[in-house]
Length: 221
Length: 239
Image (cartoon, rainbow over all chains, first blue to last red):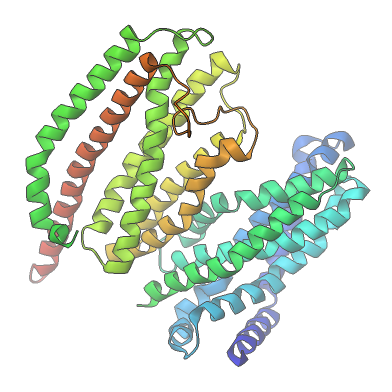
């Protein structure tokens, strides 16, 4: 447990002192979403209709962009070898890394998403559903992303490859996340979709650190 | 299993079996095509387009079978370090991707006259498309490392992660009420398909399965030869 807290402290400290990395992912998110009104035209009817999907796709892409922060620098400077050799479960270390990654990228993405929804004329009834869906969905993105980020360590063109591996696996998050927002926007109950997202999160919590730890072991072997 | 773990012994046996499997594949696919295209009746609703099913359904089955085989081979490579398992997995991946592509394309060709559209975002179609991306991701990851050994291990883990998609494909037609029809064969009561159509379908499925083994053996032979060439290169002095 002490190691768990230490990893989170270290990751947050690194993110704060480097500063720009987390902000870049967030800026990317805002820019991607801002491109949609320019691309499909500014009519409020169309934007309102697609707002849930646009906000979610932007979040997905921004999360992909920040994945190389998870293990890449530790892999390059050798601290990953020490973390793998540390006398406590590697799965816990991965979980701590995912939590720190979510605090640095997932949480800001979640907090800014209602603002972007506002820019896209999202229905006011949908904001709570959007926040709830993002709160359940963005940790899943960090967890699945950790598996991809661990697999591509040392690969050629790792940045592009990780998106190719991870994006197909995040499709359920996208489907149920958008479904929750759209249900709320037309006045239906978003709860079934949120429950499914919660189920996905509960499945990802034990399984993804396990797979990512296996990938880290073979990357440092 | 471990008796076959010797690559040389496995290839000797596979070489002997190869012509027999190849002949059986040709006979079975030929009989299936004859039955499917000439003997079996046209459907009372779908007309002649029902014959696309004799290619579409076996390719979809093979797409799932190849991924299951890929995952089982990857697991035995990671757990028991079986020396042929990673070769089998890497050899199966492009074949599986080809079967998946064929299932998607024939499905689109059938969907245009029947559903009036080439593509719908139905649960079955979407999950098969994801299966196709998983195959592509696996192949890209395996080839992305300078050390082939690293690529094999990373790919094996990815193949096991992607296994969650296989039951989703199988049960997607039951869980979501969408356009793609539910299973007609694997039901508790009798198959909901006439024997005149079932015969060509099963013949084609057998032919596809045998064809898969033919291509698998040829590809495994190629991969093993490539591995030996690499080993010989490394042994060469002053290189």
